[in-house]
Amino acid sequence: MPTPSMEDYIEQIYNLIESKGYARVSDIAEALSVHPSSVTKMVQKLDKDEYLNYEKYRGFILTPKGKKIGERLVYRHELLEEFLEIIGVDKENIYNDVEGIEHHLSWNSIDRIGDLVNYFKSSKDRVEGLKQMQEDNN
Image (cartoon, rainbow, N blue to C red; front, side, top):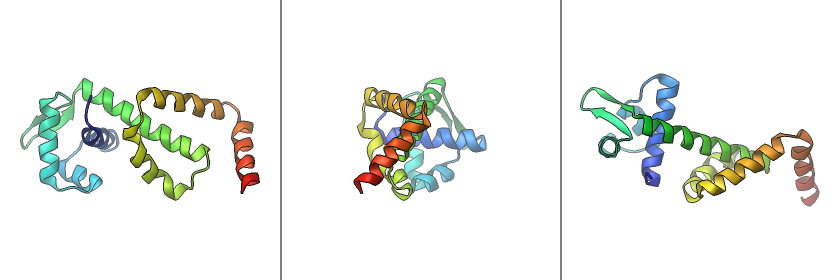
């Protein structure tokens, strides 16, 4: 499995390719607030570990392995955002909270959170009941 840092890069590369059709070193550096040289080093490592194919000066693409992991990482991120929104976390905190916890949860925990999100989404009354409970406690 990739390290948390590798996951951040794979997730960002996946998102860029999905939205723009390509991912450049400069785009990744900007999105992750790192130096382009750091991106180049990580891209080389991801190439070595077969998450992407990299050709110097030509760019890179995710391998099937990298794409599969990218899809799962995006799913994890979106699921955690949705979960935090359902449980009433303030919108301005959600992104940073997800960034802080996403690498520290097992996939088993992610799957259980997914079950809980689906439980709440299956009935609007459940989400409304939770919101009412939160209001009553405040």
